[in-house]
Image 1 (cartoon, rainbow, N blue to C red):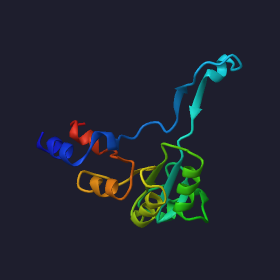
Image 2 (image 1 turned 45 degrees about the horizontal axis):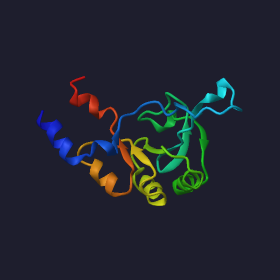
Image 3 (image 1 turned 90 degrees about the horizontal axis):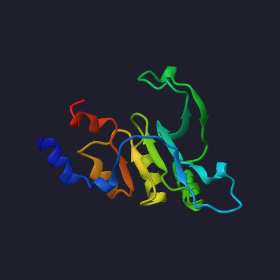
Image 4 (image 1 turned 180 degrees about the vertical axis):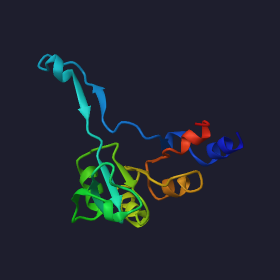
Length: 153
């Protein structure tokens, strides 16, 4: 209980999120020209996945402590800020930066500086450093799976 109270003092609930689906269904206003199938749309939630300071798309299940086993679908030649600007310039809200392992703090900060208050950040975020990330420009911080420990799970 003391941990929960301490976290409540440090973190504004409006600035935190828990990991959830990155795609959500949204209702749009009805319009005579829209078919019933188009009345619901899928909203794209872009991300910047960081591994060893680079933007990467990692093959599921290959990220572990042994970098030799890591497999990627894509490694970007662009810095993380490039994607933050791209998402900002195209109004792709709800974007997030995820730090996959060590060596990503500078790259994550670069992304947040490129779009202050426009990106969520996660990966290694806890009660002792969450405020630091909000102060660095994160719109929200993702505490995964840390909140589960507060609930005794």
